[in-house]
Amino acid sequence: MDRIRRYIVFYGSVQGVGFRYRAYYAARNFGVSGWVRNCYDGSVEMEAEGTEKAIDDMILAIEKGTFVRIENMSVKNIPVHGDYGFEIR
Image (cartoon, rainbow, N blue to C red):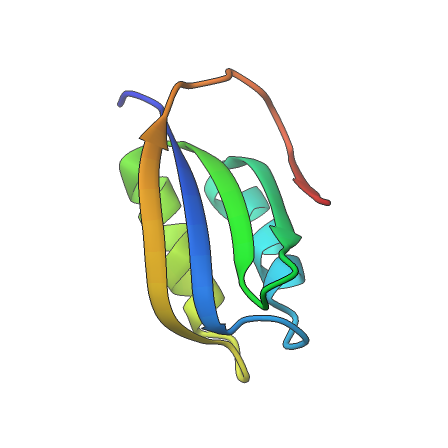
């Protein structure tokens, strides 16, 4: 399977609810690399690299968080970096 990289901005109830930590553990479980961080406007931005299925599965796992409520997402495909690991910024 080909690796892809996506820049994603999540909107909704995504700060103060453990979103970044869920993203970190979900990324590790599905073999996704990249990073996640809070934005000043209350959204959360992320770069995720892996197979399309792994990235989709990771997002579904994040959405299962008790207090996480993703209302909207902005998604852009970006060039693959070939990095390893996932970090909270």
